[in-house]
Length: 143
Image 1: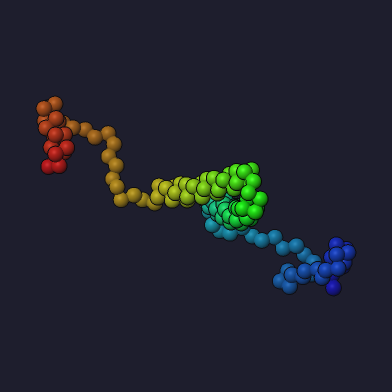
Image 2 (image 1 turned 30 degrees about the horizontal axis):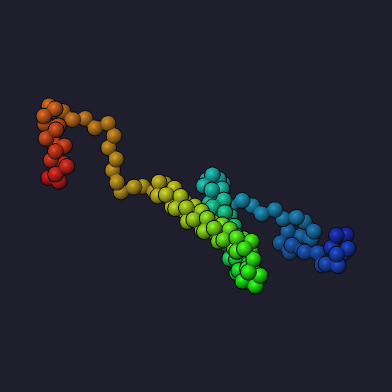
């Protein structure tokens, strides 16, 4: 058994790592993905963390709304109904923020992937002004 004062004082069995030997601290190694592109990994971790927080906030807010609605019904106090409406607005805003965050994430992923659209910059038209106007008129008419 490993002598560990903290574990003994708390009445717990200390953890043993069978792979590395007794009592040694094993530091996990970074994944290859994190080493290859730490910026993308950080953005993905931040997105996942924020998304999880939004879900927790929305679920907790929904429970609070249900409980506050019961209080408002029982007391019939105007202030209780005001609190209910504030919670409802906060939940709606949190849901909008969650959807907005997901849309921004999707847009950023779409920008990373190759697009099927071809963008032409710095086009050059060789011809007269009348020919250019005729070409634009034809394009507008769908010809």
